[in-house]
Length: 287
Image 1 (cartoon, rainbow, N blue to C red):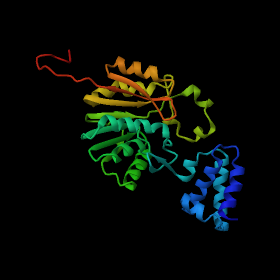
Image 2 (image 1 turned 30 degrees about the vertical axis):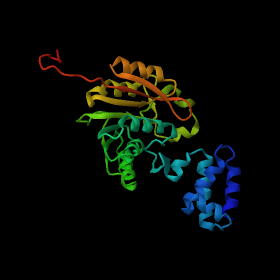
Image 3 (image 1 turned 90 degrees about the horizontal axis):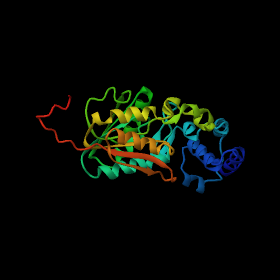
């Protein structure tokens, strides 16, 4: 069996999946350690028995709806290749609008950014990759996620990042010019109704109490303490949570609150700006 024949047969076997042909190509690229161009020019290359055996095992996993990213252990985000594991959420194109907006707001200024719930580090590393003036700190409650984020940063040669364990703000000791986060925001009661592929991802990174707004509330309620004056916060959320998130931000005194759509046309992020406070030494602000 050659490359072309295997792709044709595996595409038929994965007919229950809309991305069957693409997934078949990704599997063979992973096993043979080749790229798309190689497939085009070497489609008649014979596969060894060992390669076919390996491919069949992976094909079964994909047939059972395990996400292709977990099978190949990598996922592209912001044109960067990230290694992932079962301990980290799979980076999604929807989240790229968060990175885009962060870079727009930061401009070319020197800035410190905090990424809460960093996972594999895709948001933190993507922002850091765009400007050496950005110094990005990524935190996560999961030790394995932090190890993966550090690995990705090193593999991608991004030197202006740092990662460590923290339960949201628990180990944060300083202020930042921007806080970004893609926290869990799926309502736990709705989790059972989600697609099968989502069940392979870490539940701790997906669902949240309080109708999916529990962790968003924690982040916004504490953010001001860790933001410099005029600092920005950018929160990713579900497309039906836009109004609630805007309300929470406004209630906590954030200005210029605005929601933005992802590339699929759904409201995906909301931003807010910490107001500038000019302190008067004669006023007791703690009273």
